[in-house]
Length: 123
Image 1 (tube, helix red, strand yellow):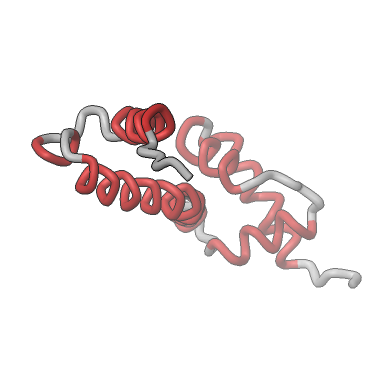
Image 2 (cartoon, one colour):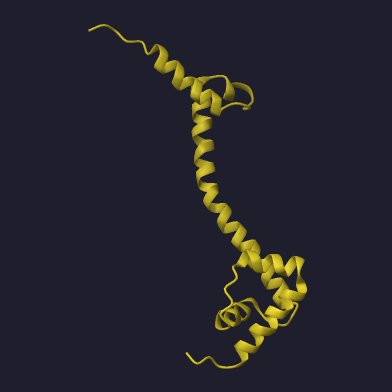
């Protein structure tokens, strides 16, 4: 059986990897072995951080809502409980945007939530 050196397949594989390593400094973008290690690590971080980003944004939104609610004398958990009892289904992203950009609307939501928290629920 004749020996196969790889030729086209090997070149295509390496070309694909160097395309991913474009912009890396020094040998990280020039030497195959080091570029492969660097790209593998970068892809792992990218995969992980796509999930971490969701967590971090949710934390940020909750912090903003909490700050807005505390300025109106209600804590975050009571505010969310009041909204749930009032059947107001706004996500945390839009609530944080209201707290920042439209504080009057946020104040109205806090009033509704306070009213629902103070009266005991039927459930």
